[in-house]
Length: 321
Ligand SMILES: [Zn+2]
Image (cartoon, rainbow, N blue to C red; front, side):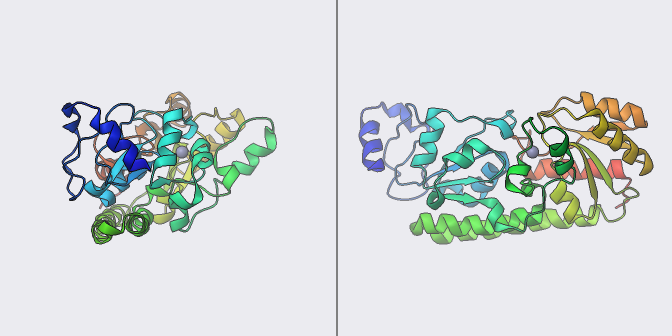
């Protein structure tokens, strides 16, 4: 039904619609494409795949290659946690062969996906419990909206551990292979290649962070739990949710920890106001530096942004490797 619809739409449009990518796979290559309302449209032979936000977009690009028609729900520069879906995005999800998301990051997406046509990347890996101070925050301000973690009971920021993301890549290859059997081997091959690339990145982190003087990361929002878990660091997040202002009690608690552990750098991030981190840094005599939680597209890509994060960590934590 879908393909018939897009073909007839395509027939009515001008040939200029051929602006889209060269179709690498056979049958659809000669068809024109519908550009109208759907930025996703291309050859109707390609399965439409929706990625919820940047790291999943990157991963799906690597594994799906030119065999899928990919749409991302969260625009660049938008903090993904509070995304609201428009009518078109809901219909993209409904029409997609697969929606790749992480339950708990974006409640609107969690509500819109159908179980049999979605892949929750968190189900592919061992998850960690939500941030340590989650309960405490919940205790003192019952009426406020809280971080996403509390609703699902685990920390959803799994993409900041390359080794877990490698596992997700493999599983995504299997899901795409099942959704588009004609290209099954290509998905599995690209998944294996992506997992290997992420394995190399994981080794760089392991090597780069073994000889650090400090082990404590004070971060603006508690996004780096998996990175800390994987590389034996300790994360102290100022807030759970980037949209939430920390309480004065939480701030003074973090200041105490930072002083006690000789923290020299408080990490901020591009999409969150650095004000709170700057105040804290001046209180404890530390600097600030940007550590990218990769919730939105970086200037490079996932790999280059993670390598920048590694350099930032090595400087801030006094690592010699
Ligand atoms: Zn987050």
